[in-house]
Figure 1 (cartoon, rainbow, N blue to C red):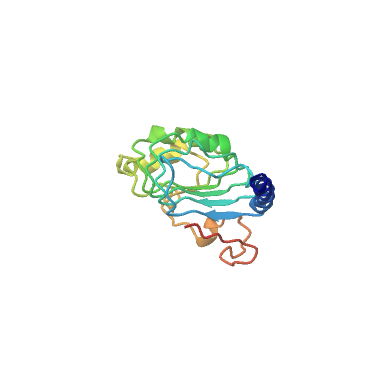
Figure 2 (figure 1 turned 90 degrees about the vertical axis):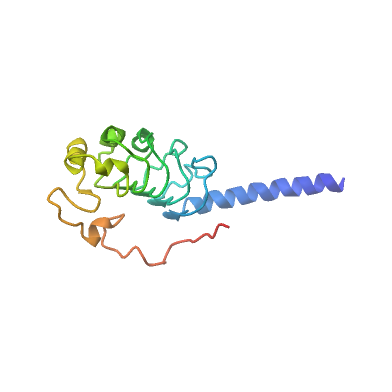
Length: 190
């Protein structure tokens, strides 16, 4: 009998925790999971419940694929640098329609054709590919700007090799200092 009560309480507690997590996830605008190891090179645990997420950072998490990325309609900035992604970028256009900034630096991208799916990201203004093999190709910059005419900045510079200003890197473009901690939640995952 005692075992049944514990199970029932545990189930109720889990339901309450899930409801609280859902409520919290809807408040999160920025989520930084840098250096958290991925399972089998895929995104795990991130769900479409993060409906207000505007900034997501998954730097150096061991990703080889973004196929498990949920639909995040408000996401504007995605940091995926220092992973092992070599393709499959079509998912980004499908799941992140409002993406404006994408950092793929330090990944395994080898040729321009890999970037083809990014043409569907109409709002994409900034793309970073530092330390990707694709940057070693002849006419790399010209080819990328031709493929992705919506881009304003490639690797931090525009077509005339003018450096992007700090304000061009803002997620929301409102001029508000996004480094302030007001209204943000921080989670320590260990």
